[in-house]
Image (cartoon, rainbow, N blue to C red):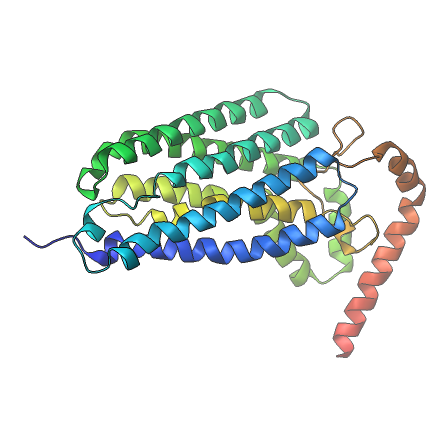
Length: 319
């Protein structure tokens, strides 16, 4: 009887960790830009993002340890294809320590924009359910230990993945609704007529995919579908990079706000998470004072932004 195919057992682990490491590099750049640029954010916001960055770095380290054991320590031995890697249980533990706080944070931002409790409450319930399913999954992996008993992990893994996917889909629906119904969409429409339709359309598409969480929802759906339908470990290609995708997208959304000292073209982009960053739910310090100054100078700011945009277009055409 032929043994398990290493490409189908360990290959997805390796690809998933490689993807995770690549996203870690992007995360370092994103986090450094945020930390140096948005120093006026509230202390708890900056500490929250620092916590996510530290946990993601740990997640990458555990991922490397997961593939190191079968491919290096146990290379060429039956144990590589018999036993789960020792650090595999850390994957559900650490992932949900990242995703659950993030989902709760996004639920709060959705409430700040809509003033409705129903959708945020559903997201929080799903987030709590996902962390319960994740710890159940990790504990089961420790107990079963071998790839031959993988079916015993199915039930806790499906609970974990189902709650995670539900939370992601609810967040995507809510953020898409906020973005579509925002009054600033009219401003974007006016700007579209003045600028290049192709460039703006591409930027808009990227903005919608990133800020509304469509990409993370797709990854979460692929993870659970492949886990349920495939007997191999192909789902780990998506699973290992899922938490890193969460954090990259969240910090990218933070970075999509206008920098406090640089009134740049980001002002023209509607931000789904921070559209209604009013005084009560603001993430920045001294927002009440900045509110007055922003209101008095908004017309001049918009005009200067438009002038900068036109100058950039002329420069690019001349080149």
